[in-house]
Length: 408
Image 1 (cartoon, rainbow, N blue to C red):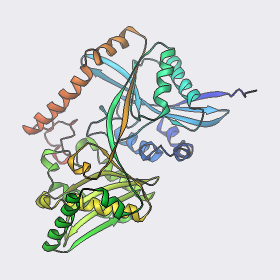
Image 2 (cartoon, rainbow, N blue to C red):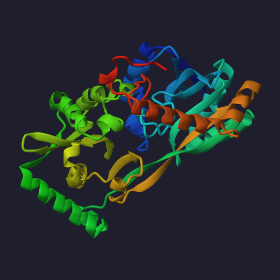
Image 3 (cartoon, rainbow, N blue to C red):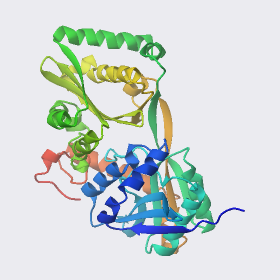
Image 4 (cartoon, rainbow, N blue to C red):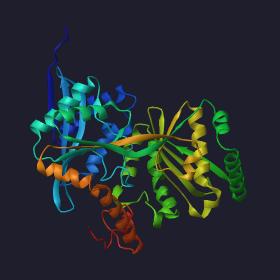
């Protein structure tokens, strides 16, 4: 006879109680290989401390089976306006306004579940319906397309006759490495291999070339300011999204501090004589290397310093038994040369069965205003940057440009 479990859900609304979850939280992350660094307590807590605002409220749901924590829904309640309409939505902590936004920090999120996946999802949605008041819809991204959460959310939403939408948020590029550099190199195009060797030789003719890997916490903090100096000489500084973007709120430097203490950070630097000309800021977690941020001195663009640095990172991975490299989203020629595999991540919407929520659903999808607004906001940010108007909520505005900002 099957045992009947006692289920209980605790709602966490304060940062003090959030901090008390650290041990159980990371225990669940470690229990499932698919749960990455973005779901760790450290990542989530740092994001919350840096980006909490009056329009955001903690709504962590802790699911217990017979008093044992077996699931955590890392939710927050967000108040905003869609067009002229005030809305209240439930999202994952650390989500950006749009999944593929340059202001997004997270490449993979999910509900943390140790066991009894279906029962946990059912209990979470039931709790939101019965105990959490005032929300109009749930928006969750980016969830791996192979996560059991997707179908279970759809199944549970249907029991309440709620509108459910599931669509692709973006594709993330992964390199699945063989056992040796020789085998991997042979899979790359002959012209690309020649291109790398030729550019390295040309750079060596200009001076002494040095590839540096920095993992020490103290050294990371000492050398991190050099990243900004490289960015200043890169194309990103004036026309792209710099690591110094005001929307990042210094997150990457602060995470280098937090993650460096845990041995997660790998900072690669390419040095020509005494000049630093390229960097890659990577995270190593569960034997997966995440190519988080990188840039290079535009004066050396013709030598492809970023590609040369990445080649050394791949070789180092193979030497140390690392078989997976995540290049994140954005399908570019530079990335495609390394023969990555695209992995799909989804975005889920669940609209309550109310008149107001159904109006929102109609505006978002049948009228396509959700995607239209996304495109409009990106166009607006680009145009304002072109005319040197600095918006405080634009990823194109650097932190050093905050003087005379216009807050829209």
